[in-house]
Image 1: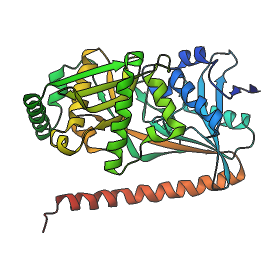
Image 2: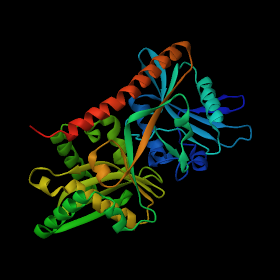
Image 3: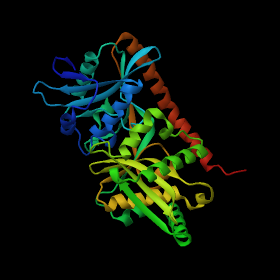
Image 4: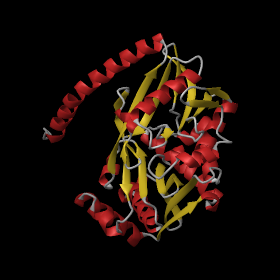
Amino acid sequence: MARSGGKWLVEIHDNVDHLEAEWSALVGQHNATPFQSHGFTRLVLRQFAPKGAGKPVVALVRPPDGRPVALFVMMRSRRHGLRWLLTEARPIDYCSPIFDSSLAEDDLCEIVHAVLAAVPGVDLLYCNRMPERFEGGPNPFVRLPNAARLRLSAWKLELAGRSAEEIVTARPTNFRANLRRRTQKLAQAHRRVFSLAIGDEIDEADIAAFREMRAESTREKGRSDILAQDEWADVYLDLLKGGGGTCRGWLSKLEADGEPIAYLFGISQGRCVVATLPASKLGDWKPNSPGLQMFSDTIDHVRAAGYDCFDLSIGDMDYKRRFGCEEIALYDALFPKTVAGRAYYLFWRLKVAVRARLKPLAEAGAGKDKGAKPA
């Protein structure tokens, strides 16, 4: 463990195994997601050491009184000839640093500079996919001049204090009617059964069937399957087998006459549930929309179980909006340390400005195309 002094004491670690107490002091209901839990982070960092996928750098920041006020989980990398610290990693959908909500924006700027000063041999710190809200209010990190809005969004469905009827009626009328009709049609033709298992309750046979269905459905859709990638598959499999501590993997299943036709994998921490990896049968089952039925049943289940939110995570798929989810803006931020890093930062700011100017034009063009009548 390396230390750097000054107004902010920065401790540098290469893992988080011994930092569970500090994690518990900082992670709350609104300033972290299951992706930022101690258990999930521990599993992810354990993947890097033996497989050489990156070099973890964990910065724990304390003021003179010794209490933890910020945690930065980062990876060393080289890009464009520069040495980077990155908060992003493939399985992590939200990569915001975790920090005490009492900190002011000026404190955050000082803390970032202290973290950069504590890590030798780097040019830049890149924080990616930071949600716009923090502790029920604006995330101060995304208000810094170093931040920019990402094109990508996250999608979240608030469940606390809402009845099942309120959640369903918030969906577009056509979508709601079509989903109800397909659900009824499936139930009339087959014995329709939904179930959800958590952690070590998940059957090994279902894990194998989920992986096979996921591989088949992603292949047919022309997408990549993270469960087929050796560097990340173990993270998800460990979560399914209860290896994430208080962050637990769950797997919901929809069956027709005893045959699984859809699975949905996710993680939960506290009162928040995140859905991440869907898989469903296509072919003859496609007209029944088993994947959408699976999402609907899972939302009903977790609401009845008392969870406060159902997070559909990042990705701008249409079905997330149709389920009545709220769009959560995501931001990235770049912090230079060296002269070379500063030069790249200025180029990055120019790219952000150009993107911001072009966005209204692209949206206007997309709106015209959507409203145009086919020839």
